[in-house]
Image 1: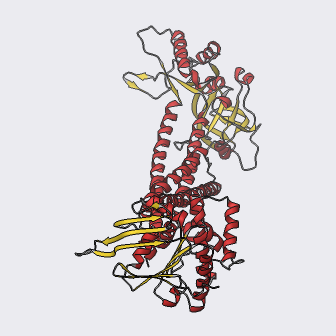
Image 2: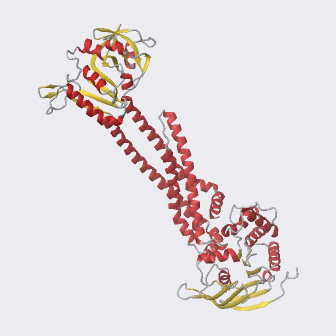
Image 3: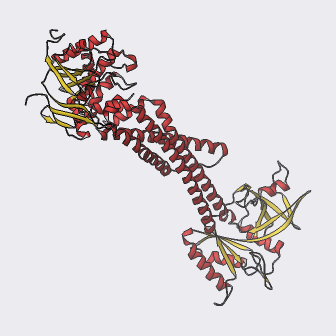
Length: 405
Length: 235
């Protein structure tokens, strides 16, 4: 019954009720919109990481040493294509793909165009291992890899540098260093990675061909291998097994350190995770402040309302409202205002997030849990900030109220 | 023991300033069921204090007050509110209707606090009461759309909602013109004729003339208590 009384009192003054809600509407809408955009941004970051490749372990040979001077990662010559093949053969239960990589940086020439970029000798599994899509033509095949074929797949940047706008690169021949290679496909653009490096500025060819004709290593050494696991759960076990296998193949005695290193994407994930939690803390602080301001707005209006409606309170007491009923009425009014404001804020926030995402082409992720929390919190705000005005109203003396002018 | 209202040696002392003020100084009155009583007196005579205590809006400093056989002199705020809700109806000089609220909802209000009737019954009773005070068909009007006399009728209908045995009226015609005052007093006379006890505070002699009993107060004391034939009594 008191609930009905409170709702009737709210509906009696629609403009003031809406204005009272406004603080909460804006607060909740801001929280919902910012959370949705923030969550979308972190999804985008995770996608970025997974574009490096899923379930990936990268194995590098130990760094070469020239006397005491250590050189860059992958410069050692201790790891060979045979190692990569052995990993694939022996650890098939853990490993899905193994793609060795041999890198060279060489001049590319086609007619009157030339360009210099990274030439990656990779395995035919590379599209699966590192999430590359082929936009035109095809990737090279295992047969071509085994046959030391002079075929290559070019990145979008390379295509733009070597070919005129409308030209179809597939089937054309380009020179890599001194050797002619046939272009069999063009990779779909990945764009710059998180560190600003253009990922499309490369040429991929079979590692066999690159090793033999471009690098001409007599040890058939490779710069790294990309190992793609069936499941990230097996990461630790896979690392142990790869270590054991490579140590055995390299005939390392127990006292000697590994002559290779391993990297995986979990560290990167952890960094991104900490960035995301920092963002969440900041957003929560913003949310708390805006809701606090909204709550103070409600308290302010409710206090004014108690003074303004003092004769009404007197009348309600005269016709039989107990102090508890008056208290309940004002708390319910405040809670109804704040929850209605909260619901409207959720709607406005979701709409705003969608519009902002649409305009900026940002991915938007709206979590049901966060909207429910925001809504419940708005109810709590109403209760908390409505209590003091309601308590004051319930303590009023009916005679003074009725006589108040 | 059969009196509806029974007060004995009622005192009310306000401890304002240096000297305490005796607003009521040992008043004893009995009012029976169905009586129409006018309380009169000059400003400051204690008649408003008297009505507040009788109406359970205020508690006396001393003495006893039995309403319908129940001692109510020392009750909590909550108990007084429940007594007001169930046993008393109020009509005020300034009507005290809720702004922007239609007449039906005004009349329904006391039952919303009591919760005795179902929604349908409540609505039906409110419409019947509006009919009773001559406002049938105006149930959806807000106070701003009603004249002073009509607003006071809505207030009377509201006071009758919970079927109280006693109706308290504080200068009910103070804000009304003569014509409307006469109509309201005729309505009171009719209600009195139906057995409702009415206690009214007024300072106008011709308004008091409608009541069958006059209590005159001066300096917190009852100075005159006489019964007479009321003006509209025959009607």
